[in-house]
Length: 341
Length: 268
Image 1 (cartoon, one colour):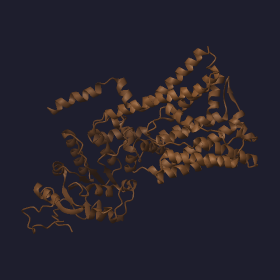
Image 2 (cartoon, chains in turn yellow, purple; image 1 turned 90 degrees about the vertical axis):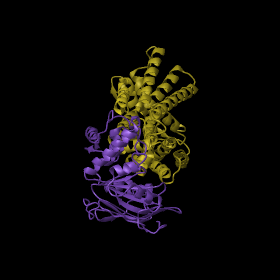
Image 3 (cartoon, chains in turn yellow, cyan; image 1 turned 180 degrees about the vertical axis):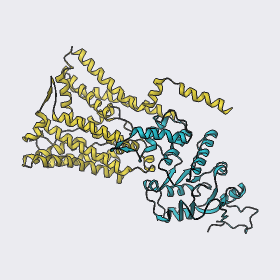
Image 4 (cartoon, rainbow over the protein chains, first blue to last red; image 1 turned 45 degrees about the horizontal axis):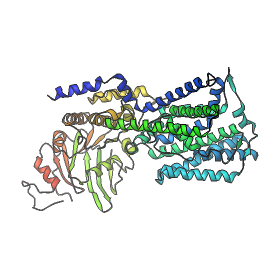
């Protein structure tokens, strides 16, 4: 009797359409797919609206160049958000490391010391936040807010005004163009893409990456499974801080100067890009490649606005609307997977 | 301390070789003494059931063996060596695998990822997904598990399937002792039978099993030895074959069994 009742139940489960079971199995990817769709729609819409003047090699290359620093920040932010944390300090860290590097270079410190110092400075602030979060049980929001003010303050301590960078090694990062037809890549763009590649490798092909996902999914379970939760969580913030330092380098090269007021609000841009890219703020689900798409969506909107000569305020409004849309999509997905349980 | 030790070790279990021993384990949560001077031996090819009423200290005992609770006093003896268990990772390294009552799985990750979390197979520094997936199929089928796919997120599985994933995960590192905390509490009749069969298979393959349970039917079905906890103390150690249901219930509740020659009112 029991076999006759259970067998059909199993069959019903199996008989669900392949599309449905694919969606169930890859629910975590849906928001990232949605981001790709939105990016394509944006590009196609702009292309149609501007009658073929938008998708040009020059524009697309500039898209990466103009947003290299944001991409680097978004990669670091993805690590933190995957562990169900948040890092509000990255914009300030970028400004601090940028002005620190500029100051060091102007005082005649060689570039091979200045650049590692920038990266180490960013990583140190990340370490501080990570330790606060993990060992002092401070909310990530508050801990990284402290990091935000600390880094901004340090930036003003280094210099109150903008410092021009004349160092050829740093300017080379920006001015070099590796051309292929009309397409080009700058070393800053290459650094950003390499950061993405390394992050993909770490998150999907190493034990550390697997642990990041496990912690975001269920920290208690991860601890009971004997994973090294403390070390991994601190490492996520260190990575984010390091990316802040790297973004500081990219931005200094991009603007040719360090400026202590750089990157005010950029941490929110990075978070927006990560969320648009399909990473859940509750942690455990998301992809670095999604964050890449998110940054491209962000950059494309910015480019479209400036092409149309519209108010920059529209940029904020559109990004805000997109964020709203994505958060609703994510809630629906989370609610669906919880109902299934 | 222990009111009664009905030490009926079966003829098949040699008393000298234990895979895991607890010696004088005590632990308090504030003023509450959760465990008081508890000794426990686990032999290979043996299912030791730990039973007791709510608040008897069963979960604390599981925590001590799993490394999530560091006891105030007492030690673990593994392979004749006295050790302090300070972390779940260390417990795993020593071959003590625990299946927690809430299973401790990561719902967003798929079956393979859950099985291998913290002990991933690697080749040339990167995760070897192919080998892990192949091995996962093998382990799951050995346990007689029916999962739609080892690449399905654990959130999509049923309660019994999730239980099997948790047990499979525990068995992966070839542990010496498998500790199960209320493995059948959330399961239906068929799934319970499956889990009990799994426990017997694990026992027959030479592991020691500690089964912590409320459910006397489960305990009598698979246990070789029944250890009773009452208010944090050992209150009886029975041979499951010989001990009657009433004896065990009496030890759990603290009422002296009528047929025992013991002064009335004597208690733990």
